[in-house]
Image (cartoon, rainbow, N blue to C red):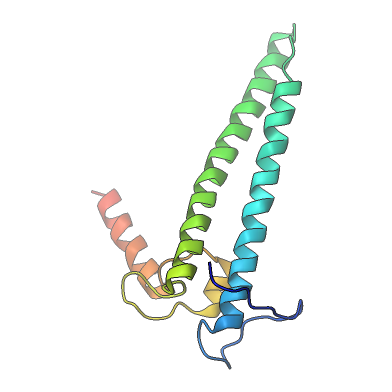
Length: 140
């Protein structure tokens, strides 16, 4: 693993500095790690709640409502599990030096997009093309 680069807590990546310099890489790594830890902490809480919350509810409507809530929570956790996988992939790209570059065009992804969606792998234009192609095929 590369040496940690320190940055001020009020630092934000800027278009006025070289793209994916050490400070930007360190900032994105920090943001990704915080996001991942937050998701994992929520998941641990959900597992504990579900283990403790198992109870016998005599009312059928109440039981159905609780089961629906549990199913929704499990779907949410499954989506978050997929996000954690994408975060891990983004962290690998940071280590490899390919983070922040569009997988389709090789061009830099805008900092604004990366700050909004740190796991982005496509530039905005490439993502829009991808979504248009997907829509065309879905309408067939």
